[in-house]
Image 1 (spheres, rainbow, N blue to C red):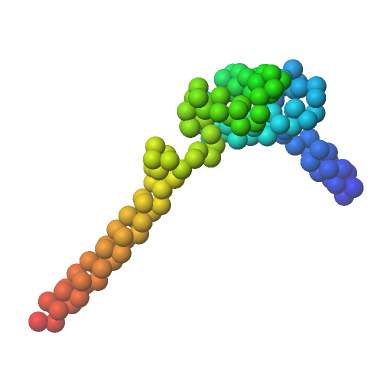
Image 2: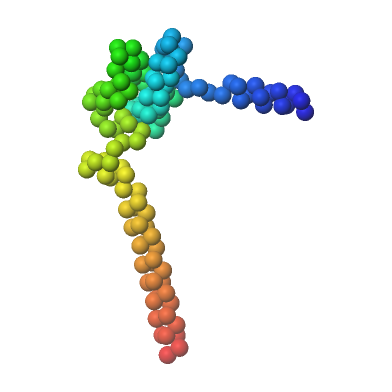
Length: 140
């Protein structure tokens, strides 16, 4: 039993920390923390539903290096994000801002769900009406 507890604890210690390679890590821990924070909010344009911090794709690696280069150059977090967005558009953000261009991303799923619920309600109302009509015909 103790053996299993030790293996479990070691498994927790070796949890994945993302796809950041040792050669990418900045020497200054504060700058590295900023880079990781920014990288977790940027989407890998190849993987699409992963942050660049978690992606092994070559383009994600290039973006991680770009983020670190901009931080080392003295850019603020927002300046780094703005620079990446200027090159790749709002799509590169895991949480894009609500604007006219991104309304479909934010509200499309809700609209589709409402259409589905409305369709189900109509279906059952027609079924009920059809069943009542059938019952009336069979009694006559």
